[in-house]
Image (cartoon, rainbow, N blue to C red):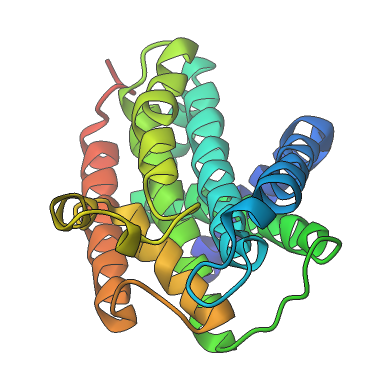
Length: 257
């Protein structure tokens, strides 16, 4: 397959994915905006003043990066898991698999679609946060790199979930029982310095902790984790998830069954 054809195939998949979630924007973009606004109002304005400062910042300023990252994580994951499972359920994905399009292009196309939705929701939530707090970017390159890598990672996670899912109910199992606990326990609402040494050690096994803290460093300049190490962890997960997702696609697991 020529390079020009590969590019056309990739852009076609990405364009279709973007059109899919933009066509139903009241279901894909509006709910996270409303949910995050409630978080800002309740945790930031109502509860925040009673908690006081955290990490040298007001509680509202401290949780904003975590809430932005949480919206990116959930929407990147949800977009790919729902989209690929729907294609698998409707037997549309078989058309791609029998085409000359390389499997890595198929995977990458779905992932970029999830990244676009995750970043778009992240931008919307960031704009909403400006109504509740002033935001200063301490390190713009780190901020962009972290949010982009995180969106890629959880788009890949959503793809793997969709491959294994056998029904629409299976799509919600991982977000409910794995993703949500990891996110809430990933330092979104607190610094791990508040935890005992034992629970600090346990928290280090939570990959979301590295993403939230690296992103918080980009915005506020503070982090509970070494940023370089956090980027290495995120990159390692991306490589592992990509290779595993590609292996599943090459084998046709859950698709050709």
